[in-house]
Length: 352
Image (cartoon, rainbow, N blue to C red; front, side, top):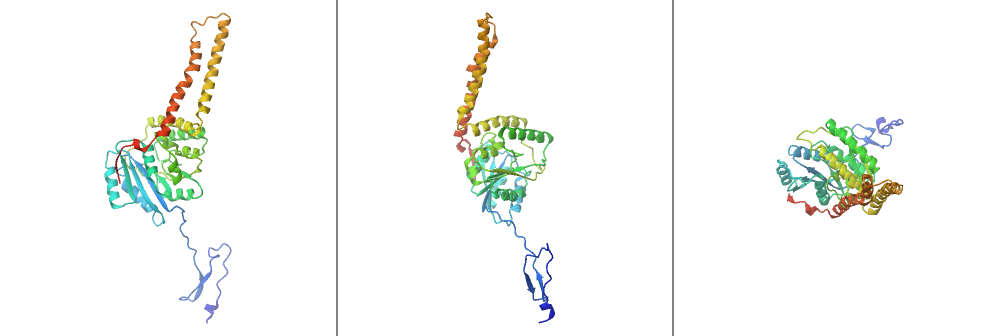
């Protein structure tokens, strides 16, 4: 045996990247060397993934989106399917989805007879999701599919819902400002400390999507509904791209609808199981104010001041009688809607 074979490998210096690896003998060059550590891909516990994509008139974006999804999940060891929910598109969106479905059975779809809104599309997707984890994302290519793995890693830390945070939004100025205001009001009124409630890019455990209902504009408040059910929620910063094709579906009317639905969510999440805590407070407040007003007028009547031309008398009566009725009728109606929503109310034109 020659000297080179007997030569011991040098002591690795502190902090050397090969320090923890055992040497091996290279027969060809006849010396010892250290193997480079092999960095394996981080493993994710979820074996089946469902990706839900609601869309309305996004025919130019569908094929690039599928390519990006396939690229982001390549060699990850995850089975996945993509569920498109066509919300009554009148362009070529459904035609393109059918072509993709014929080529690849991982791609599935439902198509509404007319436009029902994003909440209805998400609810159909939730009802038909089969994965251990569920991803929701928009079809306009502003959400980046490469963030799917990051969302799943965060979900793997023990959370039930992980929401994306579009920290650097690539949107028009008015949309940025209105979104910040909306998120601020929602944080204050719900007490949930996340920055972007309405981000379309979210990850859920299967239990979450099977136990919440969304309708109207409640897709904006899915984290609130999940938190009310006792699920753990978190968020991560995600990339946001400028819109490549088509037009934004944002309008000022959606902002006002969202505010009304915030009131609905607050009622549904806090008082739907104990409505008298809400109505009782309103009733007591209205009754006391009305009593004070009428008590004051009664005192004036006793000391000789006539009440025949005093509109305040009617104000006191209205506070006592009418106030609670208006609130109770509206909110009791919301209770009935919340408990009776069913996917049968949505006419499905086609599915595959």
